[in-house]
Length: 282
Ligand SMILES: Cc1cc2nc3c(=O)[nH]c(=O)nc-3n(C[C@H](O)[C@H](O)[C@H](O)COP(=O)(O)OP(=O)(O)OC[C@H]3O[C@@H](n4cnc5c(N)ncnc54)[C@H](O)[C@@H]3O)c2cc1C
Image (cartoon, rainbow, N blue to C red; front, side):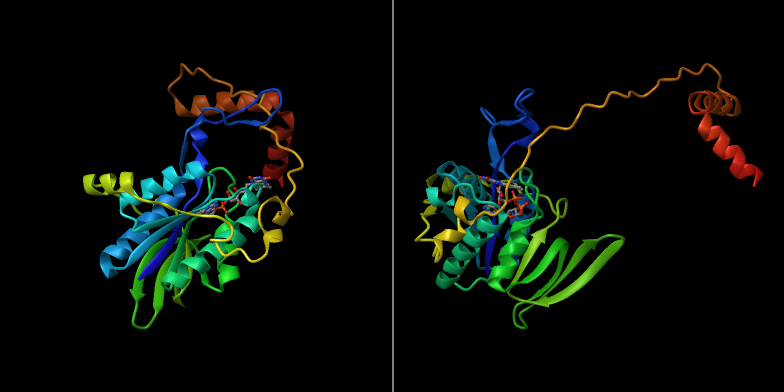
């Protein structure tokens, strides 16, 4: 079984600040991490490798420093790592990113056919959740989004059954391989890296592909040129001015406390009292 897991290197959002004057994101000194959602995808892929054997290739499009994130994935047990990196990819929006990643997966598939592609649910910086579906569409893969559990994989029949978290319930989906799964957070717990794998990761030769190695056929569809998205404005949320009103209640009688609170609400918002009286007397 050959699984490709797409991982993105992102700034640790817990440490990001928005500049108070320019409203731009202040990235200086912010450490880079593997997008946390992608670790759930990686763990699920590694579990399938443990069960069925085969390979897990981790794939990232990003600057040369993103190699560190791929090395981290190797330390968890991934078999191979490919970094798609080229100045020509700079400024890519989700359309151009999914085009480039799809091309790279096609190229990886020429070495060994790919049965499954995993992505995270979304990233913590871009947050669009568009890249996984974009890759699936371009490669003609069956798309399974928000997957919370892989129920069954039948390699002989080339079929896959998963649970998908949907609004109001869980869907049980049955489809054919090859597929692309966007994995939901909290669906598993990332394993610890073994000492052997950590040592292997340190020595591992991450493969670096430029646009030609990645099999990009149309350079007008990558990077800024291939990105029709325009960011018209970036702004931080307006700080709220209204504050919660703390009521100190000496009385422990629930009825009195309730009446007391209602009295205060009706004094501050007489229209609520009027509306309530109207409804009760109707
Ligand atoms: C409106 C807008 C404008 C933007 N403009 C620019 C710009 O001008 N310049 C710029 O550099 N960036 C820009 N970006 C960011 C860029 O679009 C994203 O970094 C990139 O397309 C991935 O999108 P995302 O972070 O929303 O990923 P999502 O779609 O949320 O990611 C889903 C999953 O896809 C996979 N994935 C996503 N990206 C990668 C990757 N690079 N490598 C491997 N796997 C990946 C991961 O598994 C991830 O969990 C813009 C984003 C938006 C929303």
